[in-house]
Length: 517
Ligand code: PLP
Image 1 (spheres, rainbow, N blue to C red):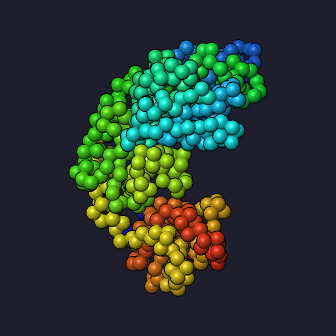
Image 2 (image 1 turned 120 degrees about the horizontal axis):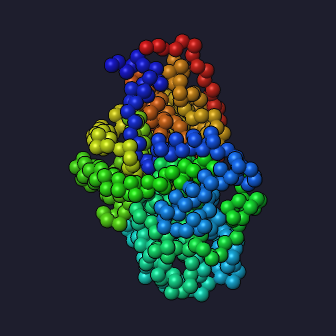
Image 3 (image 1 turned 60 degrees about the horizontal axis):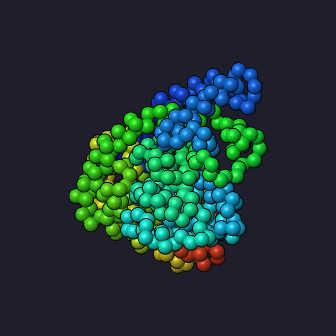
């Protein structure tokens, strides 16, 4: 196939094979759940707060789902409160329990590897007078129990520790944590979002007072979470309004999503059984990667980590290029948490387990799920191998620190900015850059000089790499991509960003003649 004859979209479509290995970010909705949601939307649209038969039907749907979720985590249905997502559940537990205890007691102990929905809420609570202390973790992210016990004092009212980590998969020994907490009369909450459906959960046996869950991590819908509150535990409503959820969480219920969450939990044992197969695939992936990159570092523990999750550091390989290459070939993986993927900072989880900034930027998380097969593993490893051997295949990667004043003013440099308008508003463009549309790149190509160096930039260095690849195939011999994108430049060369950002921008017009093939 002659790549030079292809339009940009066609070029992207050659690599149509899709491999999804980012199940910790979210999962696809299973057929069974989708059917349940559709049926609920069709037949149970009554507002459960109304009094007639149609409304009662909706109440029945919610009650059934409540029982299904309760069974999956071995709680009582009355201890289950539906929310809009686990972020809401984490916010509400932390803020509500703090309200119950403050100012008599002031301290929450947590871990440095919690999800951003916990870390950011704790940051907010600090501004309200709550004292937050983080218990150290070992190099696999396991909480150091001795340190935990020594941190507890008479001011402590809550320990907040996730059951399983989203980036490295570490499973915490929650039972041991609650045993320690109970000795001192301290309550325990656990973010169980990544644990449900992957490892067995028994909130009562674990001794938890509060826990959070999310439907979209176990093949359920997005927009539905659960707060578990042990019967009799203190809690003040976080969202005020109607009497829904027994007065604990106001707002008309998202009946179809709740039904979907229940349906996803119905087959929890099947999900758990399937974990063995997923773990086997994960081991295959690790073994094959070790063969092509013997110096790779595995950040997830062999035992005591989620069966589907593996975090791997590839020394001397910046993950931006590798992620872009994988994306280019239809493989979806990530460098860390989905919630922080638009930020440019190295992962706080990887830093907490001792990785340097550089190692964190050389790390990729693979999180497997039901859609994966051994062929996906082979294909992914093949692409990684190609990247290790050929690097960026003739595409130079420019680092933000290389983009100094001289470089930016070089008349031999032609900057192409492929970001959508909304991102250009958020972060100013490089000076002298030329704005084009990524999705119809071929319509702009006639503007680009063949005798200059083309620097393609985007927000974080992902799209620009793909676009640079395309330009190379179109005969542009000196193409480079800005690693970490405009965000990286803003961060690392803020002096230049402040002085020159957004200056002399050229908005290119698409050229009428479009190549057809
Ligand atoms: N906690 C953990 C560990 C997560 O991985 C996530 C989502 O990635 C959340 C909380 C937030 O869940 P939600 O998307 O339902 O707000």
